[in-house]
Image 1 (cartoon, rainbow, N blue to C red):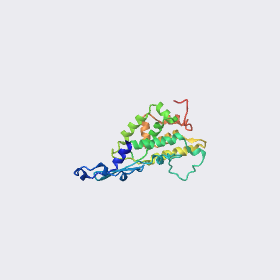
Image 2 (image 1 turned 30 degrees about the vertical axis):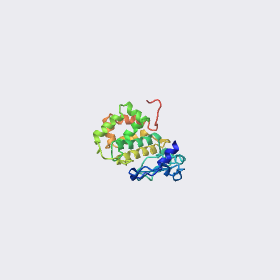
Image 3 (image 1 turned 135 degrees about the vertical axis):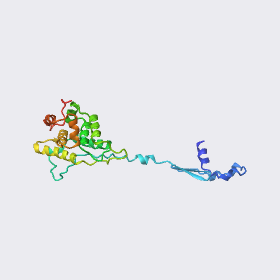
Image 4 (image 1 turned 45 degrees about the horizontal axis):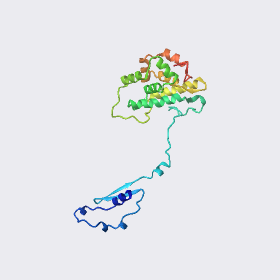
Length: 240
């Protein structure tokens, strides 16, 4: 039954055939019908127009699995490319790098053209596991409050504007990163540059949006001094 339906689908039916008298079925010779159709190119004609059906070779498509490509940051941007960044004490911690990546994402969510100190601030809270982020939450500074203060201070971007994939740093944000880097080098201690270094770098930029938002939410020099005691620690299990 199946072979009969395939054979009939290959017959050419012209539009004028409906006006012609009935012919003897034996007039259609079985020799004129295709016995073997290509497995991946079944074609038929209907009312003078050709309809092609192609079935892809799934085995060929599945033979080569796709490899996933990911971009991993191992350092953060610097305005001082001549500095020596090969030492053990000049590496950013994994939490600091993730906080920076989250900062870029927050800038894009708000449709800002740049990654500012306010975005770096939000990135820390999005990452959430660093000692600095836990210190902020313990003092009532949450991501939602920072977002609200950011919009109140800087306003909303045009709804039709789309941020670049990696919004460039503002000058205050770049200086905050460099301050954190320099403070670690000045300490002369081994270890990584932590999120705490980055937070205090934002606090050092007195005229930046990040500093103003921190101050509006109750962060002050006393809290900065308290947090600086843990500058070289990025995570503390006892601190919740």
